[in-house]
Amino acid sequence: MKYNFMEGEEDMDNRNYPFYEVKRITSLRQLVDFRAEESRDAVVFAYEEKGTGQVEVTYRQFQEQTQALGTAFLALGMKDMHAAILGENSYYWLLAFFFFFL
Image (cartoon, rainbow, N blue to C red; front, side):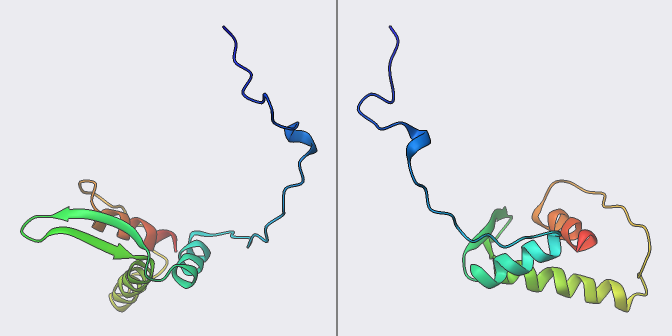
């Protein structure tokens, strides 16, 4: 048996849908900064940590942590260097990954 999911509905091609203004994002840095500005206190990551339980990280916290990691690496003289991230999948691995691409 075939179902007509559009039965009783007007043709989708004839509907007027509103356009939304979309900000053009061309880098991960812009994405993190934009989300931190638009959704500061929204949770972006949640993970389990031994002894602590579930940890939630907001967009603002993630932005601050990537910036702090960048400051620490620059203080160690690690500018314009190649790097590798070796470790198990974790929030900290992801934080380091984003730092290297920001």
